[in-house]
Length: 122
Image 1 (cartoon, rainbow, N blue to C red):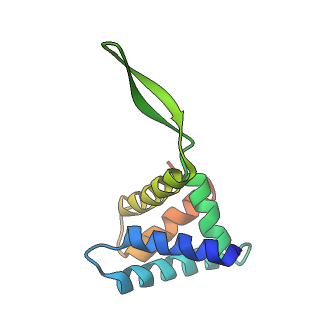
Image 2: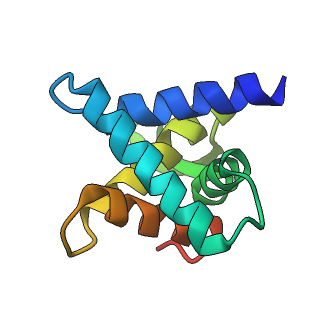
Image 3: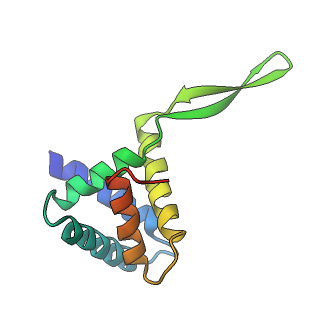
């Protein structure tokens, strides 16, 4: 059962990473990044555990929604649903990887996943 959940997380991550319908390229980047992270950690956790931990650490718990009461508009903190939180975490990791200076998306993504896994994410 755990393998199925990790596989769907991987597919969603690849889907978010994919641009212009280039699935093979996104899969190659994702696999290379996870392999780099796994080597960096030196086998302390499986790639599935690394990805799950990174997504869980990058996931927001609360978001601000606008609530209108009469003519006033208030900003109210609302807990984030689990499914939405996972998608926001995926986007946050990928955006963080895109903002890292350097060449090669696989190495930048590996740095972002490792930072999220270690809870050093901005």
